[in-house]
Image (cartoon, rainbow, N blue to C red):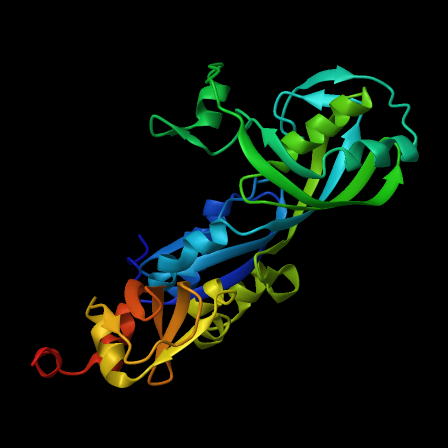
Length: 314
């Protein structure tokens, strides 16, 4: 029996190029083991047949994962026209099989019709939960669960390759968009049906696949090299504006106290990345033009920045 691995606090973001054939959770567990990390999570799953960018959050960085979950995603998708499956991907059973007679101009016209806001019903073969169980568990048992359509946004869609019966496209979509369902809808509009045979996540929020670490790199590196692959926690909210405070106010924010600024900073109300003593402290909300309200703070910075609590509370 292998000895139980000692887990330790690890904080940061690891961008992984998930290979096809592994589940997102399996990749997460491999990375967590490689870093001997206590706490880890991902920011949105990729189907096992898909590959590409998978941001993983460790420790305190998980406090900011929601902003990555809600970020736009860019994908390269390969569609097989003429064949539909029970799952909308290669793992399902074939439902229909016809010869696709589609012209490229016809495809371009159909794709333009998907641009913008649309309502999309999540597929049964998805990780969405119903009564604590993922929908795919019900689907495998032959149980259909009613799902409400939800609003998604297709921001861009381009044809990369057209060689029937295959079509390759690149799409930029809002969070919560199912590209499998989009592929099925495209096939339906073309009148021949389609399913997704390949999917690569190219970007998520401000992260790109070019930044991602290969799984093999985790295997051949030592612990110090793996730690060097981590991005800091504030990389998850780098799109938000920055606000700097002095050390006394940094201490107050880390204690969960609101801070009234002596002068109005002439900034718009809203969320800011806050820094003090040259360290990332967390996320604050600027309200009433001069009041900083702590939202999610980095407890790892407490000892380095906050100092003596009794001193602060005097």
